[in-house]
Image (cartoon, rainbow, N blue to C red; front, side):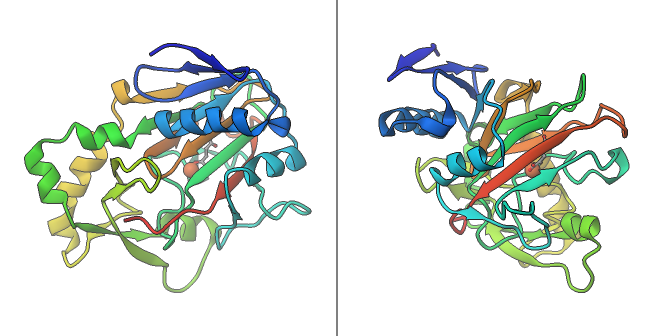
Length: 271
Ligand SMILES: O=C(O)CCC(=O)C(=O)O
Ligand SMILES: [Fe+2]
C-alpha cells in the first residue's frame, strides 16, 4: 500500500487496513477529476481524513453536496441557517451517545451512507475517534459462519437516540440484514451495532439472539482492521457507514470544549 498522487491529490494510506489521508486540494474547489480520485480512495479505504481544511458551515455543506443528498435524522436538531449540519458537543461522559462501536442511525429504513465531521473546537488532548473496517470483519469469518449468517436480519432500534433525546412512546426500529452488500463496491460487510441498538435477530428471542450478536459485535473492531484518528485543528473526516463502524473516545473530561459539525448523506436500504 503506497502513497499515490493523481491530479494533484495525494492519497496516503493511514494503516494497512483502513483509512487514507487526502492532501493537495481545498475541498471547496475540487475539479471532477480530483473528486473522482477522492471517491475511489473512499470506496477502497472506508474512511478518509482531510487535514488542515478549516471548513465552516457553508464550506462543509458545499463539500457534502458533492457526495449525494444531505439528510436529516428525525429526533435531532440542526444548526440555525444550516439545516444539514448537526452540532456535536461534549455532553459529558455519562451522557455521550457515541462512545461505543456503531454505524450511524442504523435504525432508519435508509440509514445514512456517509457521515462527514469537520472539527470546530478540539480539546487539548483526547477525544479521538476510532474506525473499523467491516468488510474485513466479514471476510475474517469462517465459511461456515458466513453461510449461517446469510439471510439473517437484526432488529435495529433507536433506543440510544430515544434515551438521549427524551423521546417518549414506542422506540422506532426496523429490520436489516446483518451482512450487507455495499451498493457501490459489491463487497459484503458485517452490519451490526451495540446490544442496545441491535437487541435481537428477526423471529428470535433476545436470549436466542444474544450469543451470536455478541460474538459478531466483539469480533468486529480488531486493531489490525482499525484506524484511530487523533484530531488536529481544521481536520475533516468522513466515513462510509455501509462498511465501517466508529467509536468516539471520551477521555477529555466533561468540561473540555469539543465541537464538531456533522453532515450525513442519504443511503439506500441495506440489502
Ligand atoms: O464525535 C465523534 O468523534 C464522532 C461522533 C459520532 O459518532 C457521530 O458523529 O456519528
Ligand atoms: Fe456516529
